[in-house]
Length: 289
Image (cartoon, rainbow, N blue to C red; front, top):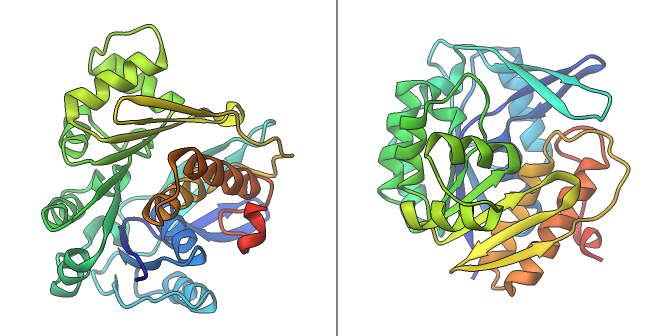
């Protein structure tokens, strides 16, 4: 039977110097799950404006369902200014308030999460109390809770992160986010493995994915650490690479692949997306060959 995953979070336009591209970490995860044969559903909100209409058209062009994307909360569709440095690493200026800051708890969203195999959520969407309350309510209905920590300064506090970490069955974090958590939570340990194990124990998180850029990724699963050195590619930009990694990890895990294979597949797709401009290049099964 086809697996179902619901993602909740941002949908927006990434505005590059050369033009705009559809994005938002949560939408990127949802779209990548869809590309990989998961019945993917996405809860978010857009403004009643041209940017919002264009995002719906974009998703329709990918044959992606938009029935859980809300409109009409009198806030504009989200836009983010993206700047790339000399190493093609992205920094973001995230406008607020925007439509996804006020996602409402609707019956159809509750039903979708209740019937799904997993729910994916992130910290950025919790910067506003309205969306945060919706996410916390939906987490109560979820069978498997996947937390993409996705720290975007200044839109988080350690207290909110603790609240969200306490809900997580699976956590995805990058090397910079792990340093922040280590310091703020006073985690001991001289190695990433020791810090990950303490984080896992403190919040009873079953699986933690740690991405370390061009050095690949680690997974702590039931106390065992797995490592993949990653794939070398010529980087176009890093926008969406972590999102595609996470989506592939989720899809492969739900499809029952061994953890080594799950990690390899996730690294392959993450590297491919980093080699392409924008967050959502098209790909098929050939990306795994």
